[in-house]
Length: 135
Image (cartoon, rainbow, N blue to C red; front, side, top):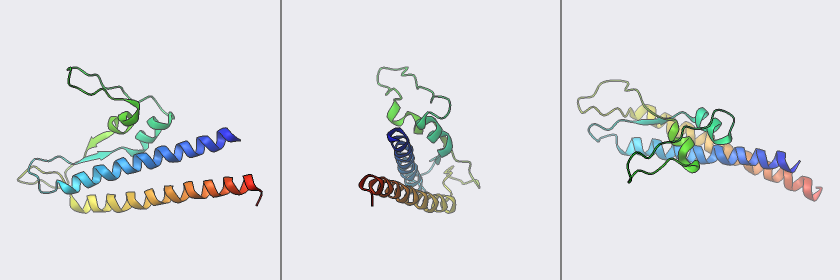
């Protein structure tokens, strides 16, 4: 029983962490909308979640080929192994690939999913607390 509760909460915690990382990524794209040559980034959320929870192949480890490189670790390795470049919806003279309509929609959608994950965690905790106290 305890393992089921722990596994469910761990899964939701990983999802919440990845949603937060995706929100940061989208915010970075929005902040760089006017930066010439900036290439928008996107995260394959489903793959990152599989990698983070161990429900798929392990995330590829990044090799530190130079002394100053930071090796990919367990904390951010899953999120960073699934970063993609966003395909430009139209060509720009400054080669910036940020599509503000797509970024706004992604930001709003990710916000709703982040809040839903928080509510799900809260409901799980309340249910577990209710079961423990017998109310």
